[in-house]
Amino acid sequence: MNKYLFRCITIVSLLFTSNAMAQGEDKITVMSKITCECIDNISDKVWESDPKEEIEDCFNAAVLGGLLSLISLDSAKETDSIVVEIGSNKVKNGDAVINEINESDLELTKQQLRKNCDRYIFFENKGFKALTEKALTTSCSCISKISTSIPLEEKNAKIQKCMVESVSKETSNGEARPVTVEEIQSFYSNLQTQLVENCEAINRVTFSEDEHKLNSYSSDKKASLFYSKGQTAYKAKKIKEAIRYYKKAVTIDKNFVFAWDNLGRSYRELNQFDKAIEAYEASLKVDKFNKTALMNIAVAYNYKKDFENSIKYYELLKSYYPKDPESPYGLALAYMQKGNLEKSLLNAIEAYELYQQAKSPYQADAKRLMNYLYTEFNKADKSKTFKRICAENNITIKFE
Image (cartoon, rainbow, N blue to C red; front, side, top):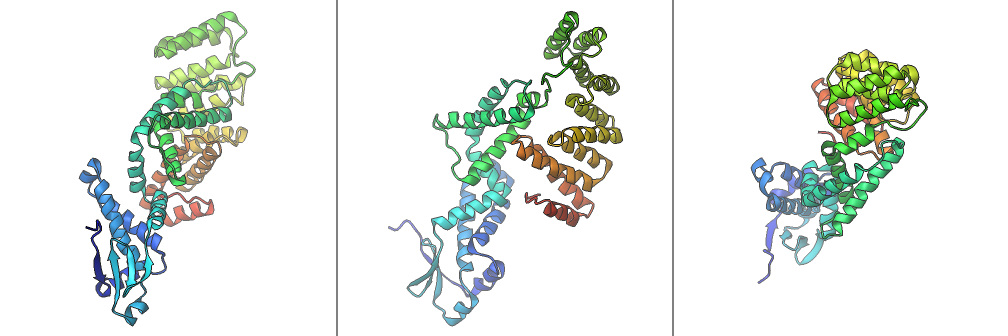
């Protein structure tokens, strides 16, 4: 018995609907839209268990829509013998095949879905869940070994290498791996997001500014000893004890930049933002180009809701380090808090592009921020402004 169930469907009742939907659109576009809409309508209960069969049904519905899109109204008027044959996925005029949908069409539909249908992207990533979890653990372990004293560009390159090598290692152990370009892009984007959200090491490595410069360390042995004790206490989460040691270090050597920076970081841990700002200001008196102090003083002012000063220091950071994405990202947050949505979006776009250029996992954060801004623009009835700014800056991300 043939495993396919053949059914001939007359077109008359469905033809007008199909042509209205498909007008000006090719069959792949029609199929991807039908599938995505169908997947979006799968109940949460089914989605949280196993929606595989329902998604297969969505593809079957899309095939029918694609087949109908291949038939023109004129050809239907000329003859009443045009049928859609489910199973073989062909459109026939009598015995003659006039069009069909094949495996290649289905693969092209999936490629469209991987670009434009968020729920389908999530479903495919679930298929690589075991690989993602293992790669996340392996990548995070690798990232934790990266030196914090190297330039940011080098850190980002090493982080990317950790990700690629971890996936290669896990797939060599028999894990399913993404194959198509869309699958690979989607998988690595998801892995980046998981690392940013779940790997403490990536935050420490990315934002620790221990690159050795003049006055980074102290030549005074006693000051260095107190600093070392402060580092040990901080790592043990004994923040107040760390503060005591850092204060002793800077009392002995007022030009000890790392001690000032870590003193500021420790005060921030205790939400003592005014004291943190004082420590960062002392650091900047020694080295006005100190990236760590500039960024963290801006963050401290942001926590105090003093957005004017926060913007001031982020702008300074941006003027000294125009390729660093942290300044436009911080500006985007500050302007958003001030209610200036347009300036916030422009800076978020700049941060996203710089993160991409640097191949930084933190492009996931910038994308999330732009998604949030999309909802804020909509609330303010400014969706057209949002779309215009994105179009002017060649941003084609799907927002929701």
